[in-house]
Image 1: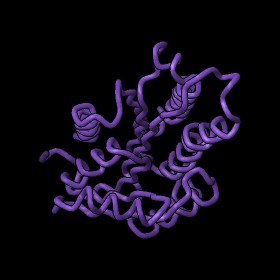
Image 2: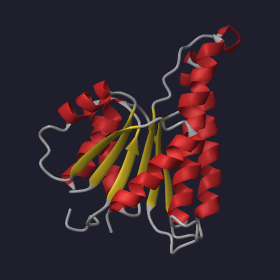
Image 3: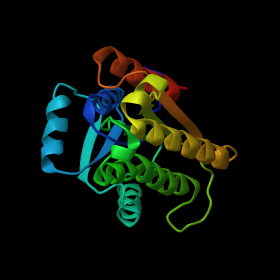
Length: 216
């Protein structure tokens, strides 16, 4: 714990127990954790989940992450208030309805694109560009860590939900491209693929692995 970076400014986007475990772990290491949420109900849930944590600073903000322009303004505001973002974590819970792709409602297809693909692209594009440049748009000595977290795509899961495997493949491909583009900038890019989300043991392991990646 003594080797965990001091004064770390982190942004954690996502939902569910996995995301809350990650937020709690970062707070317990005295990090400032900025969490974009969609409603006051989510803020209350987050505050309740972290009520016993006495370290760090939790900063929930109302924001629409998949919207590129709103995401850009959000991260610019964060940097203006807290300074350069050191750590960004986005959690994708690719939980979509099963059944054949030919019978999938178009609304469900759109939901998958918005929540799993557009979010992955927008947050990656906006945050990685912010890590590379200052607020005036000038390239700087980049640093920081970007971590995408998603559940494992497998043949068995694909039979249950074709949308899940499409989302997971797209996220993996986006991560490969992003990682290649920033590998010489000083930014560390990771994509964690978990076996199962929202189970206490796996959530704890994911959170601990993220702490290990951040520990110097």
